[in-house]
Every structure is written in structure tokens, then in C-alpha cells.
Length: 372
Figure (tube, one colour):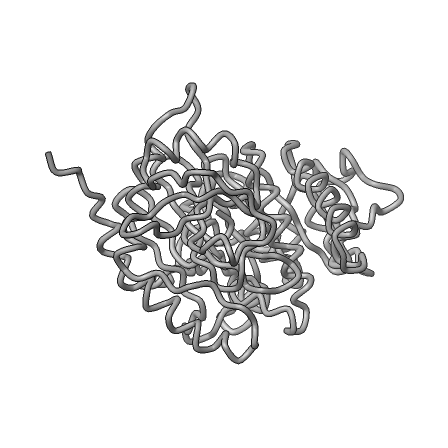
């Protein structure tokens, strides 16, 4: 019998091949080792195997696994199987519990005419095709950006029969505000990018605990934001905790410490109310209740955007984005226009609120596709 096919895999594979081929031309200028370019057929086969594996269970748990297309010779410190395993849903499901930790990839390469899993590795070269099973029926295509932050660039998200291609450079008329531009580009040479990377890491941490939550970024050296917060703050911090994510020296030890700080702050968002940080990433309090500033008008609409190719901006009421967290966050940014609000929903959606001076309204950016 002919095996059932995953139509989305065949639809998206030629475009993904073109994406990686185009970026190879730019990456060669950096004189770094590049990962091999998978052809469209290879991409399709990998996506199909990962998709069907995602719908299975191993001892009752859905598999979470990351596949990287590269030969063992290009991997850094890999472990190799004596006999490579044929790439398929059965092998991936059984291997998933051993490699579900973040940053560990199963290596995929051809043995003769067949794709096989040769082992696993943490170190992969620039522009390596990576396919991650995030949830049942939810796959993410990404690659390493080659920077010290070790951030992966999301290229596409496949959720069932839905295909979402990440728009790497939004070109709407007003242009995205600075934070969103940094989150999309992640060019560490850009001004302020270190802060953008930290915000992105905080967003990932907020989303991971699954309780939903809000985080407010306010200007350091100003107390104007207090007019939009019910006083007293239940868990105000008398001596600001300064996260080392933004200031620590580069290096693995510092990165581990920064990661612990980010996880700790992200965990605070699970408490009812908002976490408040200033833009030096000093913790000011958590459990804060947002109120409309005295004399301010209720926010009537926000400008909704999503960094997905083909997604058109629209003006909506904040209620359409979610519950009271979204409405209060939109109101906070409407009243405190030099602040940013991050909101995680329990269903995994994630929204960043910023004031757009060009449009004279609050912008709401749906960015969960960048966080997977």
C-alpha cells in the first residue's frame, strides 16, 4: 500500500530549498563553514517523517525532537550510532525521549539513496537546516544565525495543514517599531540588539510555563508608569534585582547565569498580575494590577500585525486578541507610550504591545511564531 503523504511537506519544500540557497550566497561572504544545502526532496522527506512522528506517543508522551541535516564530519562533538537508523516516524518516536533536551539534534544524512539518522550533536554549522517537532502536528523550520547568542532564526511553521512563512523584513507603510525589527533581524551588530535578544529570551521563558502572564518594560529613571499601576504593588522589590542577561560578559558561564536569571523572571509572570522591569532589566515588582491613568481615555483599537508572509495588518479592539491581560496591556501602552508590554496566553499565543507614533495608536504584534 502506498504510504499516506503529508501534503504541506510537498507544498513548502521547494520554497524552503530556495530560502536556504539564497542565504548561502550571503553567508559565503562571512568565510565560515556552511552546512550542506538539502534539495526539495530531502526537505519533503524530513518533514513527512517528523510530522507523522509528532502524532505518535512513546509511553504516553508526545515526541519532541530536533532534526539537523548534515554529515557527521561537520558536527561538533557528535555521538554516532554503529548502524545508522532509517529516517521514519517509528525511529524518531523511539529516540525522542533521549534527545528532547533543548539544543540537542538528531543528525540526518544520506546512506546510499536513503536518509538515515546517524547519531546526535549539539554543535552544527551555519545555515544548517533544522526541523523541530514542537507539539503534535506542529513543526518549526529554523537555522542557526551564527552569532554568539546561539539564537535560531525561525523560517517557517507548519501546523497541521497550515503553512506560515516568517516574513523576515516586514515592509508595511509605517514600518515596524524598533523592538519588532530587532526581534526579526537579530543582527547583533545592530544598535540595541542585545536588549532585543534579552526580551526575546524573556518571552520564550514566559511562554514555556504555560500559565499565561504579562511583563511590562518601563524606562529607567522615571516613575511616570506608576500612574497606570494600582498602588501598592503586592510584590514590590525594594532593592532592584539586576538581571545579568543584559550586562554579563560573554562566555558560557555568563550565559548560564543569564539563562537562570531569565528563567527566574519569566517564572514570576505566572503570578496573577504583571511583572515590571525597567529597560536596564532591573526587577521592580510583580503581581502588579494595571489601571487606566487618571484622565486617560479607554483604548478603543490596536493595530494588529503578525510577521507571517501574506498576513495583512488590521485594526481591532483589544478584546479580540484575548482576555483582560491583552486589554490592560494595550491600555498601559496607550497611557505610557515609552513602555512595552508582553503578554503570553495559556494557549501559547504571544503578543508584544508598543506605541506607534507614525500611526498614533498601539501596535499589537503576534509573535509566537518567533518563539517556537
